[in-house]
Image (spheres, rainbow, N blue to C red):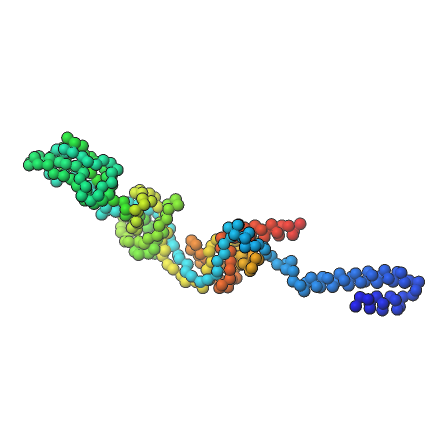
Length: 318
């Protein structure tokens, strides 16, 4: 094509005196055509120079801690946050007195000892019969108080306190604005520091001494001793559950170029996709627009992809 243009334009119509000049001019025109054709071919091949994305192998993604998940439907929990403390189970605390006043002749346990149901705690000699009898533990537990020594009189006082903390209660404060939405049997997650446990509200009762709140009680297994008596706790009570057609982990959402985006994985490519979001709970958020069921998105450490993309954009600006 280019040869025909040169021959037709210059060798057929340009005078012999201007042959060299014509050839040079023809070469310039040829180069112009080649340049234009190259640009056209570049656009048709779709090199995606104008498409924002990060290319990363699965091996590098794994090393960077990047995790993906599949977009799907699910539930969003509406919660209310309340606070309280850990108390002992009233049925697992016993204050032990002598049945008959007398002299304590022997004590077999001390503070902090673990005892089993029926274990002997002390021996008392009755003032009336002068016969000795034994005080025993009513259940398995721990000696949390001792007020008995050999040679002392029992005098009707509490000699031992035994507690079993394998089961404890969380006593949560509900203020009027919270009480209206909280009910028995609702799910609750209790935590302090890095300890967390899921349970449900057992019952709700008025606070003593006319306090401006009511109390919600949550029973907790405490065989491992993670919930010491008196510990202040934070609780999240699920007051409603909503079914949504699409939800994603909240950790998947990033802000890029002033928009909320999620990074969609296509092979080794990670593309920022603007999304419109809806209701959320502690872990998930509903997606109203921008994604489709079944797409693979970055669910953990998506900030790594964002940082790479911003770095690439900064390089292009220069």
